[in-house]
Image (cartoon, rainbow, N blue to C red):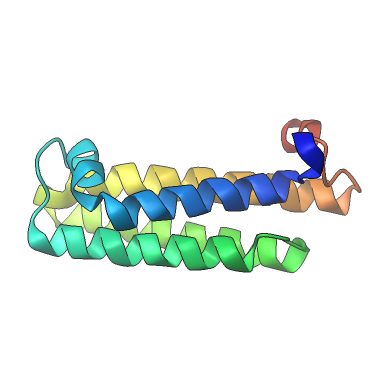
Length: 130
């Protein structure tokens, strides 16, 4: 990335921004996810998830391989739980699948960075693709 920042720092910035959006505008995100205004429970859950994203971003701002692997594991666990939600709650199916997609994307980027660090390509964007 430009300005001397690593790709891992970019992931942490993106994650922190996403978490902040969930904290500050859960209604808007819920509307995008579900296609309708979220209920009070969903707003609360989105805020909790936002707080988790902000904390995870702070913990992985200078990620080593362990942090990247742990972050990907957390994201994949969350994605699996959202698929489970989609299977059992028809009303929240669309939102659960949308959030599973976001969590899976974050996990894949983290795993790509993990792989790149193992190959000594920490800052190389091509490390994510090859």
